[in-house]
Image (cartoon, rainbow over all chains, first blue to last red; front, side, top):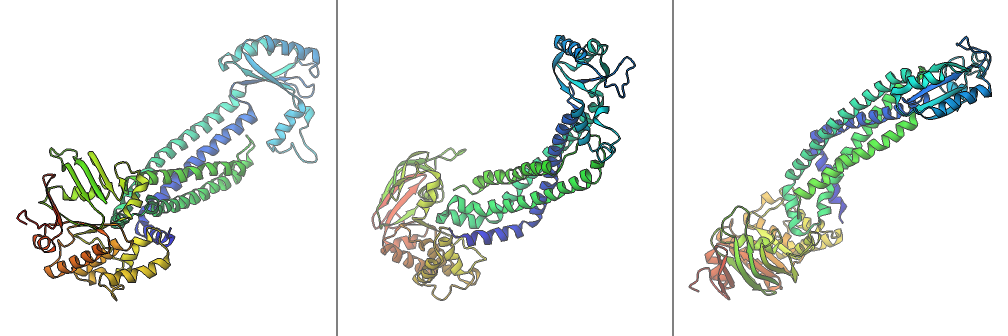
Length: 302
Length: 229
């Protein structure tokens, strides 16, 4: 196969349809960036759930004898009190499952949030200041009151944490942003598809004489289609690279420089960035190559 | 080399078929004129030979292959055995004469060495020796058609299909092109030529197939344009 002709045509094609290619690359930049932001928000929602527990959870904090809020607490919870509490949880039909968290585990989780005064040589808060707890997953979040009623008054219980109150607004905001980003991405993906289709049609029209001659002298379909495919691939790679830069800017200026200093939750990092960008890159290539393949088959039919 | 067996071709939305139960058999090395009025089915017959169209009914064989059954990916290989020339030359205006001729070899995967060797040979064969560096618009109509013949012939096809190749030429250039086609035919290439040129068909005294409203009305060895021959 003579590739010199293919690359000459590729160069000419890129130059001839420059304005259309720029339009496609810019549309890809915005649509892929939005898709990438949507993916990062999904990761963020998962991280927030991992840190705060999911929406179906309520937490029973037990007396620790150090900084209890409940005046009924008489020292740290003992094993017999814990037995009564777990029996009550086992018997409750609205409890799906529950997990026990020790003071050390609670302290580790707090350290992961990088809160001031927790880590360092002389921390203000120590593991002994944390409460042991039961993280209860409900079969139905509407019945949290029944579980709280059955357990909250038992000996050894200090206070009840309704995680839903904390995580609800955060998760709702993340969900809303994620939906908005994905809707925007879908609209722009459609625009990108139409632009790619138009570009191919224009390119095929501009080269109709060459294509006609190639068909008549017996050039293979792949050989005729190759300049179109490579043209689309180049534009896709430019769009993907630009969206990579934009996403990296979102990560650096948005997450690293601003959000990471607020310890509300654990924020997405570069690992999540690269996994989201990989999906965005595959999406970008599919978005341009699939319509190009389909349309070149149509316009240069042998 | 080319065989039509009761071939009919109907286009959607047209009341009358373009070809109606046409049966012809063209042997290797023949020179055949396809004559008839506009709309008689000549162009459709040529398109079927090139597999640009498929017959509605009947069978078409070209170079030993039944083209109705030919898979799409095999069509390019068939077309490398069939050269084509047209009334409007269909040259690439931004390429030189040599580049236009070389194009047919480039896009079918020939090496540069083959191209460098065969392009000057073919240009000499068609009488364009020394004009390889000219642009098409610097040539006369007759010379442009010679370039088209060179491009069609450079891959040494078994069959050459010519659709009104002298339609845009003056009598002098017409004679030149016909001599060239005759020469190519003598080298063993089968030639099928659709034409309206009465005088030229009468002079050449080759086989004539005449179509009328898609029907075969005459198939005459050493015929003329009209039935009186």
